[in-house]
Image 1 (spheres, rainbow, N blue to C red):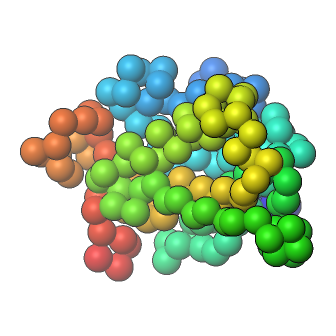
Image 2 (image 1 turned 120 degrees about the vertical axis):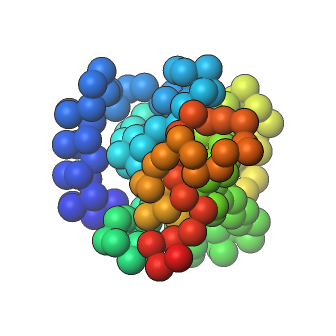
Length: 169
């Protein structure tokens, strides 16, 4: 993770009410899935997962959104955390994305929950020894931050969510 992203995540953690790098639960879980966290939480969780599981998780910035927000991914494996190592070991690499359409954001929260359960050995024990997961929690980060209660009026939850389209519509 680069210095700017690390510094930003540290500030988010320090300034967030009750925020702590030690917690790997999402705002959605803490609100019984009635709400979803803002993008600052995604940055915090990416950093917290990497700190909690330094031998199994890397938080990487892979680009910037049109509005300048970092695009983040978590690389998760007990066997390989680099493309070279995965290739050397002939491990499958599985990509999954949340927040492609930021109004349909539950994939972000479910993805963090699934990763936590995998890393704790509660789901699919041993799976992370045999593959590399790449999780992009929010692909449309600019749309994610266009929060509103009426962005998807016919959708049941969360109470507020982002906008479907990107900053460039």
